[in-house]
Structure formats: structure tokens, C-alpha cells
Length: 247
Image (cartoon, rainbow, N blue to C red; front, side, top):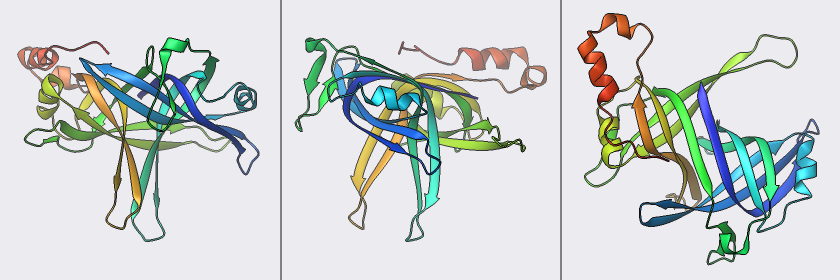
């Protein structure tokens, strides 16, 4: 499994709470600005940080403080009271550090919330299998989802278990062409940025979703495939990724 995320942004808000087992949990929202070509995209992502150190870090935070979060993406699903299926993707930080941004690094949105406008980092690295054939509209990006399985060890001496994570992904231009050449079940490696979306559902409620916008995509070779396919076909797989841009 390869599932890592690194965020560097400005603290918009934070809250310290405890779980039923009295584990401290720090929930904070980080904001930054991604520069993609000649365009700028603001982002706001929630980060969860667990453990005793969360209490100490919480005392250092205030709106406009800088924070560096390093961890993984976590997928959770449940059934709502109306019977509909709901899911959420969040950032689970395994390391969290605080810094003081320089004055010219910050700007503010229309709501007065601080954002790290210079020096922000929004980077995701994943490796897993596509869960469905990619689809693409006439003008939109190629879209599909990736599944990543992790082994969760037990804390009470019992046998652990596997947990599956599912993340929506999208890709534009050359990376979208590579993605459209793949099919359900194929393994891929990707780098991208975390993107949040919101909309109003038919019942009037606000809905949120998180996806990964791909900036670099590499199709992977399944174990045993090298022995089963001619060398010319393997070379074609390895070289069909055009113009991979740096993240």
C-alpha cells in the first residue's frame, strides 16, 4: 500500500476534543493556494491528529498560524438515518508541526479566513487498483476511483484485519489520456493534489466530497505479468505516459 499526503497551509480553525476512550483528538482546517500553470486554486482541508502530543500542539495554534501535516488519507463509510449511503475522506496526520508564516505569505478569502498564498503544499501519493473503467465527458476530466488496502493490526493481541480505502480521482489533458487507456482492476501509481467539492443535494442538504486531481500517473505491471507478456508489450506499457509534469 502506498498512501501518503503532505499539507502545508494556514490554520483557519481548530478544536481539541477527546474520544470515548479519552484519546486527545485535534481537528483543524488548513487553507492554502495551489498554483497550476497560470491559475490559482484555493483549498481548505480538515486534518485530524490523535495522541497526547495533540494537546501540546493545540496550545500553539491560532488562526493564521502555519501548520505542516504529514500522514495518510482515510476513507470512512456509513448508512445515514434515511438509509442512504454516505462516505467521507479525511487526512489523518501522523506528524504535525507549527510555524509562523511571513506576512507576505498570507492572504484572506472573502470570509476573512487566512490562507497560505505562498509556500503552500498540497501533495498526495497513492498506489492501488482502479475500481471501475475511467469515464470522460466531452469537456471534463477523465474520472474513476482507486482502491487501496491496508493491514490494521489489533491492539488486544487478536488477529488484525484488512481495511479498504476508496478515493475518487480525476485527470486532465495528457494524464487524462493515460487514464482513459486503462481499465477496471489495473494497478497505478499517482501523484496529485487534494481537491474538495461541495454542492446542494435534492433534499436541500449540503454535501461534500474529496477527490485527488492527478498530475502524474504511471500504470504499474502486475506481479507475474512480465513473464506472461511479450517484451514489446511491456515496453509499450512502460512508455505510454506522455509529458509527466512535476508536482
